[in-house]
Length: 254
Length: 264
Image 1: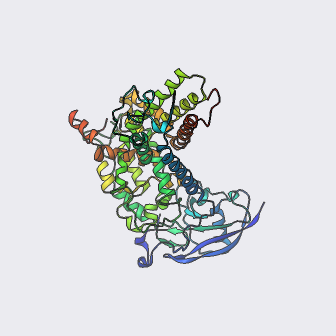
Image 2: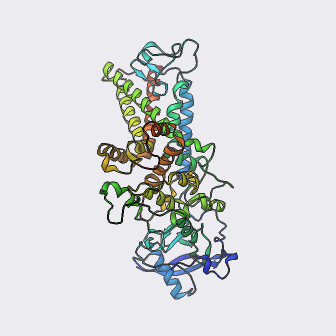
Image 3: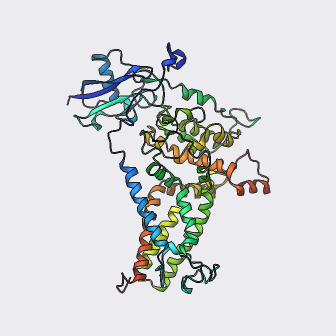
């Protein structure tokens, strides 16, 4: 069944622009990205949109559909009423290059600021020995497709541009948690999670988890456990005392 | 390849989309904060009333909001925990004032409640992708909200409070096994303890802080159990909030004689 849908799409460059109205054909089984492509093919040949796999695995077509961060390729048109006007805008937290394409280099900058996986000295690649249960927590975080919708929806930077230098965003705080939980990583990441990457800014309102297309429990499994690890390090006198009494090293983990 | 600002011909103009709307969401995003606001406010109003209500004990039932009763002058001997009343005759205020800070602190610093009241009361943010009204935000990075990090100490206290509520329920079971109030207290004690065990701090303490689960098989199994409960933390937080309010009200109504049928 085909029908004509009403779309409002953000058009403009460098932040300036406006919502433009379109009436466009929709066919059964299509997703929002299909409709954007039809607009390109029929009415707006210069409409810019970033896309790649059309399978929800590359994280390219992040956009905001009726105000919610979504992947264009995974948002079925059948979830909307036929008489509904569908508004499509670029991610709000990042600067616009053109139309629906944003400059997400903020995220690449934050990624570079995190020290990479660091195995113990003397252990060579191929010598790591660990059991599945030791790494499966971290494997959940490896499902991330880097669509950056979690960083986009996080109010810490979405509503407060001034926090960008101090806050890495949920995607990269999750990366820190992944490495901190890794049995073979020796870099101490707790102090820096709080001091350098702004974990304390997170008020665990879980929007990152709500929008994650991979359904990673970012808040419950990465951010809160990382907050608890920071508490061990910085705010819990009993843990400090235990470390002293039992001569536990503060950089190695059980 | 992703285009970045470095490729831009006009970086100075590059900025976010200048959308005027606070949100473009078309669903009823305001329902969650509104319902949360109403429920939490009702709980606070009830708790405030309950603290100052003196009908908290009718043998063998002890209202949860006043348990344990630690003041000699205001607690009947039967209501005292093993006859222990460290607060002497000088203390004549409501007994709930002495202990409610612990469960209240546990809930106030709980990760679920933080999410809920930051959204519903502080609107930070009211809902996902809805702009918050505050011009500045530092979250839990500095005083006073940095104090939320003491949650685990309230967790330790909540374990003790949960055990005391379980003791009250068992005591009622022994003395009045067929009483409806007994089963109300048992149900409440189970829910309160499940909520306490599902806490994120509990999950961290059992084994979440470790990196080699395989070296600690017992702690790993405990972590697995707590993790399953933790996935239901929000539900347990709300259900146990209703159960403690319901059990408390039930005991007080029995104590006041409002509920007076034989198996009450």
